[in-house]
Image (cartoon, rainbow, N blue to C red; front, side, top):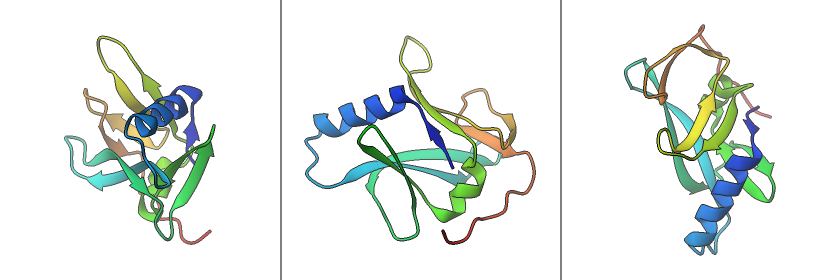
Length: 117
């Protein structure tokens, strides 16, 4: 599944603490159609849903829906801070090409949708 760095886990924990979340929220990482390269990364604070892959790192959770799991297999989620490119970033071995902004990609090949656990 997806690899999550210590920086990404730390940033998510900080976001959840700042919002004083009382529910068990985490970061949903998903792939949708769109963007300049055909597929687009989307990330939102959410709760786990039935069928999600759940990756836990340092006490926080990351959720990946079944349709996105195949595109994210072996990918790394990191967080970079700085003057340029601040935010969660994905390094994806399944991408044959990415756009300049880094939020859109083209799959290297047709990635099969994973089923069940």
